[in-house]
Length: 606
Ligand code: F6R
Image (cartoon, rainbow, N blue to C red):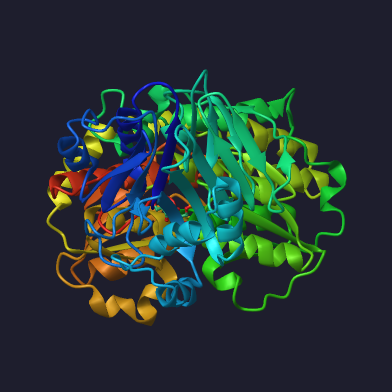
């Protein structure tokens, strides 16, 4: 979704802003723009389409002089994705330029009020009212104008502000939408995403809701919502710039698929010390009184939660429900202090997941976040957090984000089962051994790359695909289906194999492709009968099974074999061929794999 960058220093700002915007492209956007301050004048260039258009329009930034500025990638919410609605937006008299992420909920009322005072609006955006409100409240004191403006805004937003009368100064505001300050040497930055900062500095300050920061080349002053100056600590980002670049791969998605063995190793290994699981700072008493667990998330993170439900219930014998965050937040959930809420999020900034977490916390739930981005809103809101050390995930479709979440859920289930006294010492040791084998098993699944690329050529023309499975295989089917539809735009439907006969089998006809997941050995024979049922109606079956499962060849048209695993952890290697399959089908069909249409990496609006 939208991205923000800001720079104040001694070098020309425009090339730095353009470079920062390029790093944010992966988030998804449809227009972009920059504003640079020079000698009491603000110059703005913005355009529909890709950053390259902006680079062409400004000769890579060289046509704009000035050493402080702000930039934006816009993912349209209010108004069409065109040049006029692109950010930055400027106040009527050109005094202020503003970039904005999120939504100003009371913008219609404010617009009306400003119109009555004589302000005119060119765009359909909610952002333009911010520029004009700043102008209304500005009497020479920039901070005062920002504070007064912010006090009038409802909603979740982050802002970057430039004022013509304050050369060298940029202002950042955070309210329920991420904004991070980058601390450099004789230059400072802000950005909505750390990937836009790491090329310049790894020293960052995470702003909290309600905070305002005023940056110049030499100073960063931060104020709380009451306008009181506060001190905040600087954190060090451990991601390096290479991690956020393609490193020779054609797409980020393929690179990230290939990185999974390492990502899972980095996530699991440091937490297993001398045969015991050590989960960061979670105290032993944390599970006292927990009677039920609710897992909440959106999209693939929700599907990771669906795997987690089976694993946690099986090992901990505690009831677990998995709820879509966008539903949980609105159905008046029954929650108390005996409920443990597990929130899962790669970005840590998904609006619905944040809202569900807030809602459940208010109702007394304990909260644990499984999150990839350090210092993100979800990481900071939850009582405790377990980071997935997947590194930056740039492709819109998650891969290593998902598998590291599933791995952490397995780790957590074993940890909790032990704390609750639900598993024997022997089983505990056995499961830890199995967790530690996951990186090498995933490596063997990743090595199927060329075989899957060959299969994808064979199946690329199918337009209706079913994914079926039982138990954990069903949870994997949900994610496999989402991967295929989101990047290849092929319609696919995930179904619990036993449910097919209750309706959807009516859709199975000659050559319908049914991808059948057969790694949950306990229910293999049952799944086999479901394969027979779809075969009898003419379907083509591609099965994913464990190595050595020769039986599958009697029924399936094609099979992919992944390493045999402890059934509770089988989802991790099992999803890899489905990620690769989606990737190669999308490639065969000429799709924009890293930036699928209509999608954004971090869904920061409801
Ligand atoms: C799909 C995908 C999305 C995200 C979802 C939640 O490939 O990436 O479905 O899983 O938007 O995002 P996070 O995990 O950042 O909360």
